[in-house]
Amino acid sequence: NVKLGIQDELSYTYIGFKLGKWDNTKKEVVTDPNAKMADVKLRQAMAYAIDNNQVGEKFYQGLRRNATQLMIPAFKEYYDESLKGYTYDLEKAKKLLDEAGYKDTNNDGIREDKNGKPFKIKFASMSGGAIAEPIANYYIQQWKSIGLNVELVDGRLLDFNNFYDRVEADDPAIDFCLAGIGFSSDPQQVSLFGKTAGFNISRYTSDTLDAALSATVSPEAMDDQKRIELYKNYERVFMDELPVVPQLNKYEFLPVNKRVKMFDWTESRRGFGTEFDWSQLELTAPEPIVDSKN
Picture 1 (cartoon, rainbow, N blue to C red):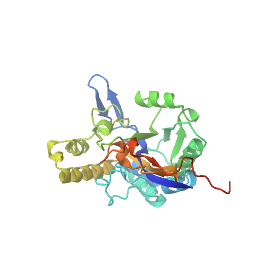
Picture 2 (cartoon, rainbow, N blue to C red):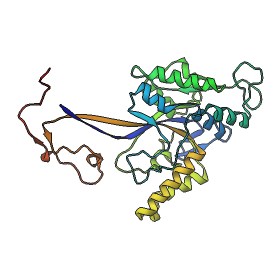
Picture 3 (tube, helix red, strand yellow):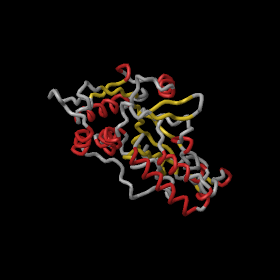
Picture 4 (cartoon, one colour):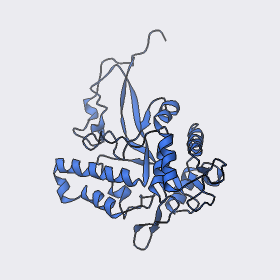
């Protein structure tokens, strides 16, 4: 005796690679071209090694699916259907690592770095909930299957405060992490991935990315159609340079008893379009409708 409302959440999770540091004097990101994760082919290979659709199906009962870009589906005008992201392809992942020079030189199943030296990658992931550890273990297993030696920072999941304290402080023990982003009613990403954005935890910037991102909030972007075009260009540039890998888009759901009438559970309640007013709510019965069999 309920209706089930389902919609896209205004958030997603992502894998963020540490590619530089935060300059606290200049209040800006400084990208390190020699960072451990600096080779884009290494980052792409790690993205191709994960089957996020299966993660969403097996761990989240189908309520999450592979994120193909930084824009979330809730922002329909700016979401680029042509972008397919990094879908599961182990052979492509292995080929990219070969091309980048990460080879297994001693035939132990683990790749060495470009200079033939041992190559270990430290992964920071948060604790919380029954599936946090199994998901982290799945990712580590998948990266091992393409020859990468990935280990959890400190050999365990980190609690929320410890995780963000260390990520934001650019702890050198962290090579990459699993984090999340939430949006409000505006899809702008300058405050998330801009050169002067403290939330830019990958610490990555480039001339091409900064130009594409800045264009999305330029006077030119005041034109609605031009703004859509500029956002889609930014998304393509970002997914090519890949400082972070969008991981999972999320569905949220809300059961509503059938006696409730006029309730509007859409994105309008968060600032899109016409706002829902609780005074519009109606009830068709004085008590909740329940299943007579129970």
